[in-house]
Structure formats: structure tokens, C-alpha cells
Length: 345
Image (cartoon, rainbow, N blue to C red):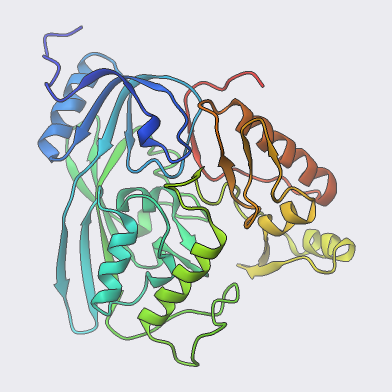
């Protein structure tokens, strides 16, 4: 170890079960809660000096924890929302540890449009750009202006324009080439002061007036998500477990010929297939095995009923992917980020 003293707030051998929404148990070799930027600076300097890898977590709601982590696990609890206005827009500068749903609620309460479709997506504000979270035809990149990051190598605090972040469907540079380079510390959202809601996706308009308010769309999204998805406090899960696969028009036509009731949406010159529909069609909805299962109200959601380890869930994931490949010729991709060694299954 180097001469740099380990900061007092860094603990050793801490269970991460409370810090992932699947509630799988694993141990962090080192662990710390970050509530101020100076703590992040101290932690990174110590880890760099001692060649300790670092994992930054928010609420752990998009995480598949498959084993112990020989690393420094930092829980991002940076808080604060700052507001600035122009004639047509409101800019929210949000610290990365804020609850994403609370940010959406704040925007809706103040009649700021743009993220109401993203209500009740679990997780922290800092995690939103990593996955480029999305729902009902809206993605966070649509309103994201810039992202504040801490550079692990230099210790600098930088703002990166959203256009430089490599956003794609459920993807970004933060999930790829920047995964070990930057830690997100804040985001800046540019929201519209005019009511320009989007309700054309996924039957969201059902039950809404022809010109719904931001609050009405927000309430409708909350209603739909609550009816379909399990409560994280009651059942271990990470929300949508699989991405909706994107295929060419030829691939879509081939599948549609065999399955005329296929649920799909036009997407940037291709087709986005409803993974949940395919999993349901294949008979997996409600299946339970070895302490895990597929949620009975939403086939896109895998759940943990009673196990402390991810082995059973990985086996279930493998079985579903193989079955969908055989039936539809489509390869499903996982949404949650995996941390820890891959156990033998």
C-alpha cells in the first residue's frame, strides 16, 4: 500500500445486498458513501495510489451483482437541484445522487415538460445517462444538455456536452469506452416551458384527453407502470431485464409472417420488437424456478423471490434467450449492468 492514508469514510468488507434492487448478496472489499465532491477526490486518489479498481453505484436498480467485488465500491449520494430559466426553457442542474423519479416529480410540479414519460423509472439521476433510460417514446438524451464528470486519472471536474456522449438505444460512452474513465457527478436537463407532451407510444394515450397536461401524462405513466411492474420494496428486480431488439425490415417481415400478432414499432428506419411480447408468447410469463422467475404481469421483468445469489437468475436468463432465439430468430440483450465474477451455471 502507498503512503496515502485510507480516508476514514472508506470501510472494508461490506455487504452490497442493500445496494442492489435484486437484493443479491455480495461483498465489497472496500466501500464508501460519497456525499461531497471532496470525498470522491480523496477516495480516487487513494484508490489510484494503491491500484484499487473503483465501482460507482447509485441506487443499484440497473445492476446484476454476480459475485464479490475486489474493488472500492462508492455509493453516489451527491444531492441538490439548481434551477435556471430562459424565455422558453428551464435548466435543471441535478446532482447525481438524486432519485430520478423525484427529479421527474419536481419537473412536473413546476410544469417543465420533457421527462414526464420517464416517471417511476427507478435509479439515480447520475445513472440515467449511462443507460440512456427511456420509456413511452422518450429517452433521457432528448432533454439532456450536458453531463458533469469527475476524471479518475486527472482529478478534474468537467462538463461534457450531451452530443459527445455517444447515446444510442439503452447505451452511451459511459457504459462503454468511458466506463473506467469518468464518474458522473451531475447532469443538466433542458426542459420546455410549453406543454409539448408525447403520448403516441405504447397505448399511453388511452384514457387521456386529446390535449393532455404534463401532470395528466405523468399520472398515466405512473398508473401503467404501477400496474405492470413489481414494487422494488416487495420483490427483488431491476425493472426491464431485456432490451427490445432492433431488427431490419426484412427480419421483421420474416417474423411477422410467422407471428401476425407481433408487437413492433418503427424505429429509425428499422423495427423495434417488443421483447416482453415475445417472452410472453413463448410461455415464460409467470414461470418460477429455483427462487427466481418471470413476473406474472410483465414478461420483460425477471424477479428474485428468495435467493441470495445470482446463479439461478443467470440460468433463467440463458434459458429464455435460447428459447427466443429458437422461436423467433432474435437474440435478446440484457439491460442491467453486471458486476462480479460470472458463476458457473
